[in-house]
Length: 256
Ligand code: TMP
Ligand code: ASP
Image (tube, rainbow, N blue to C red; front, side, top):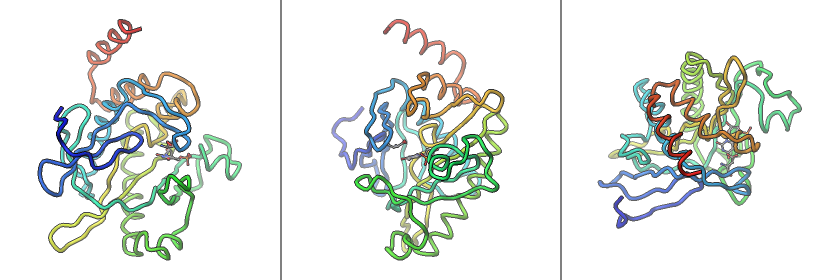
């Protein structure tokens, strides 16, 4: 790794470096796991690589659908080259099945399918603990314009339909997930593009047959087996081979 490059920002799970050309950024996926606004922390060996590869796969497909994203290409197992964007300070959560905070807040049993998909907005601000907001707040405070919100909602719905079908095909229920968007400036044009990552860190993925959790709830709820679960997702998507899994298990045995 080139240590001389300039670090732009370090987040909870990723580090951003200046890219090789103007207007590009290198995203480095760390093995760090956090939950509950970083009150709970751990390093889980292998998580960064799995998230990078799963996110690469999904962003490539979303690009192929014709939806604009920040993703350009993977550089290595842990790093991606992406377009520099101005992040819109929103966490856009799409839910198909009740789980997590909606179950707690509204008293809906986990696992209950929602009458229709629901989009929720959270103001991305760690100090405030990412409070839930409405579109009224978003446009009144100027975090995004009404036109940008139209694009965000439209893209989120399309991404939900696409990902739900994709995961259904490999026996996984897409319960919910979180997206982030950014503004990409190209010459005099600005457009809203999908940014951040889509991985088991920011989705809830349940096995269709067993309801086994194949996502970060394994860490949030102290269930163990996070890397194995993420590997299962990668394996079903066809992006890691049986051999790679064996290799890692052997390494784990050696290290333990
Ligand atoms: P929630 O049920 O805790 O609100 O989470 C909904 C979805 O959003 C779930 O798939 C996990 C994801 N998520 C994030 O990616 N980052 C976060 O900070 C939170 C709270 C949730
Ligand atoms: N990523 C968030 C945090 O650290 C929360 C979560 O995903 O549960 O703190």
